[in-house]
Image 1 (cartoon, helix red, strand yellow):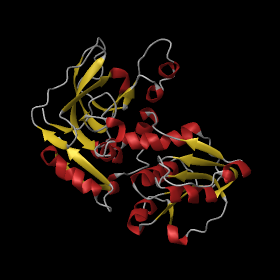
Image 2: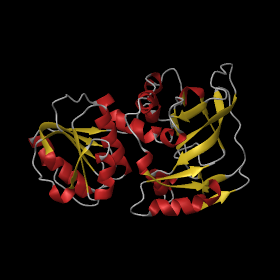
Image 3: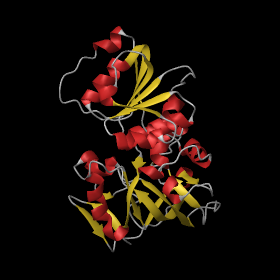
Image 4: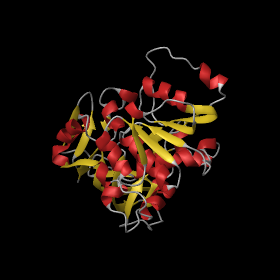
Length: 321
């Protein structure tokens, strides 16, 4: 099968061995996949991963190695991690597979990803896509679930003011998601054309140059991935407010964390989310991610798709199988 593989270099392989579903697994034929910034970071050495890249995809279940055949022939998306499933594992018991020390993660850690004609995953990670949700919307389920995770972790009251910093894919999806959940949210970024995507769907937006930095926000979501973004986010969080970190910030300089203590700020790390709620939100048609799609490439042009993903103005690049 055709597959996009990283092994010291990124390459398209035409004869990669087709995976065989193990007991309790399904074989999924990929129809559409999305490139994530994590995929790009892996090509620079992140996680030390080698193998098929990709963790955002929608496809059709072609084979099931289990007595339960209910998903056979169904269009599905896959949560990206599965754990050891050992009886004594507290994380697997709560279905928090992403925190299991022995986890496997699609295209990131110990598991071939979805940038291929086929992939396998355990049945419990697969979710059927509603009929009214297109492949182009379904491919956003993983980052949408990550945005939904904020309100799974934190109860945001109707009167509270929320601000999201960063108008890249992460910030846009987070702002659109919070807005769809009837939360009073403002998106701040540097690019008016990107902010206009959120504005068209009812999100309040503001250019960073027009932002007045003052401690008036109950919840501040940092989605810039930069130290300056973190510092701005901290400066916007009111005393006893909550600072939500959606992006990983690798510190390369010293910065002052004293305000966290002085203002009694809660810092909340927020990572992946569960797919059930994300799919229900897509089914409701309260969010539309099609404006985020910058380009779609056939798998034969996958390397070109990765080059497109590097461009500054690019949001989401899809690979069609």
